[in-house]
Length: 405
Image (cartoon, rainbow, N blue to C red; front, side):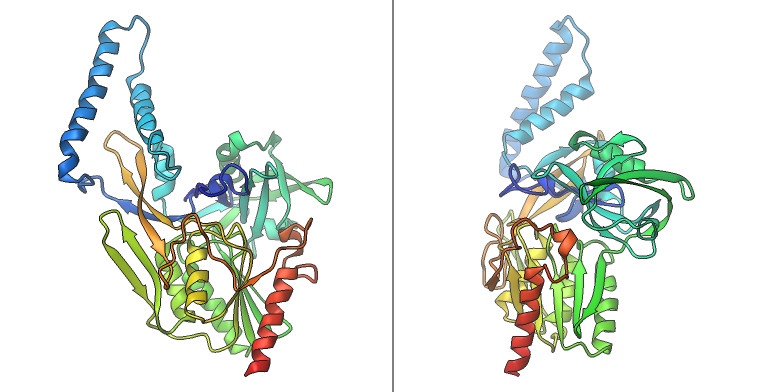
């Protein structure tokens, strides 16, 4: 499970550290490569400098051990030294992972577990933990939890930014046991009591509205391609006249899953260019089929990482129209490397570019049609309703494309 830290708006906008939680586990949402520590990650020309640096750290620890009159915890000092080194890089994505965080990073994101079946996101802007999606046929769905509900407490423990991990773990638990959530909805606090059940994460929601297919991708997690393709095929079998893919508030995910989905929609051209730290470039090219009905992609300022790759490819290759607001601007990849002493490092190791060569990081993807969500509206509360003016614009664009055929 993965955590996506912000770069462009990390201190002022929604999703500080993009804390997307699938049912109660903090997830790092970004492109991540899990690396073996045995891989030599140093340039040989830099090894002498690295050796000098490690010698200085060892000297400080030795002096403290021999001269300091108080008690010392070498593990804590070592972790502090690592964190200090990484803080000097001034890259919020390159960071030290505790052993617990490293295990969360490397755990299969399609893991089956016991919980209630919700997607959650912490917002720094509003200072709360809100539900952004409820999985079908789960305790949360049956109990009546909704996207847009703000989680106030879990089993009597109030939610704060400092205890998100604890709250996440508290929602999970043994199958058949009970968990109580208090959520805020329309100015009222409502309590829900649910029995935890076996959950298989689902990151796709779909619908047909006025004979237009609609698919929302909550995040690009493991198996999301198979989930997307199943819903996509069902919609095509029902002869929908157009397709809307909703990537709003989607913080990103896995590159391979994203490329596979893009291949369902684009039949020719470069989907993505990846530039690595050694200046080598890898290009991902479309080699499958094209969506033959009008296609619109919805994005907003919280659409990040994989969402920007998909939206950027569809826009650059003119396979559809992008509607909404300029995306988040996270176009870098992290390599997660385990440390022999426990824990690990998340290291920024590559940048992403669109088909036209546009750098995504710190810039984002500008939509073809700029549409701000009506002021004062909560996206989760109005999504796909008559009040959702971004969705309404997507419908208008599809109808316009149909008239041009």
